Image (tube, rainbow, N blue to C red; front, side, top):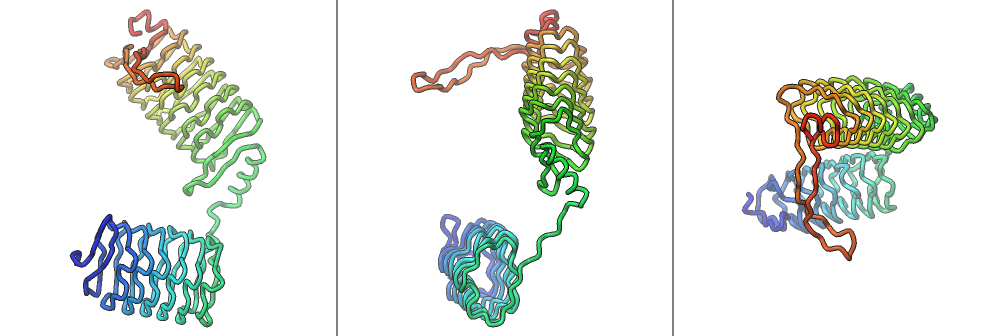
Length: 394
């Protein structure tokens, strides 16, 4: 069968076979213009999931075509693609399709059902002209533009608009969301879960309700007012830079089921004095607590395997840290420039990164500068700390 398909550049340009059932080969991304036009032997066509478009008149006047599978990834069906397919009875159009072009199903006189999924935005001129057997059609709410001639010659066809999808939120959840919005806290539904997207409030304390499961990237970033944040145990994810530069933040209560504190999460929280990382956390990100100048007390998770690069860089008030027995490696700059750090309890066998020189390519910042290689000093895990100097691990 595949020998009957003329394919170039992943597009099926022409079908020359005489089969009744045709399965287009996997990997084909498009059906070319008039590729199957006037193929009277074809009764059924199976398109692979790789197909993204169906060209102009691709199946025009396939008078015996009864069924075709249009996969979910199809974004474009050009004009007159199925014109004159008079025995085509049912068709389902995916939500990935932006519009139903002009004359797409014109003169499909045997069509009794067309299922349209949410996402389609428009229906073009004469798209269903002469579909005399199409008695009822449910239009998705996403459709905003329907041409006046879209259903010309369809007789007594009844059109209805699809009902709105059921509200996934309860009345109580709506009440909480509205209440938090009044305080400058924006909670939104994302991927079927409620996330705190932004906090612009001026309150000194933010107690997050237990309907929230995620804190978005930069949700609290640069909030100058908040001093204390309480996250509920329903929160399982914190986004990058979530609390970056919260300069007034002194205390935060982290949830019991959190698994990761990502890069820059608390970077430049200059007033943060204490952080207790629950044992559920198995990963810290780059500079997750860097430049927390007031940070004095840190309890690390017993689930950590490593302390990443510059995780606590320049925490100038930190005097003591206990590294859990689970930690196997402490990376470059992890505690560098913690100028008050005198007491570090290390587990046996832990690997500690040492200072090194690394040559890197430096791009020009201006047209006057010439790009070049430069030697960069990479700090060790405890560079510029009293502990590192005393124990020779700088």
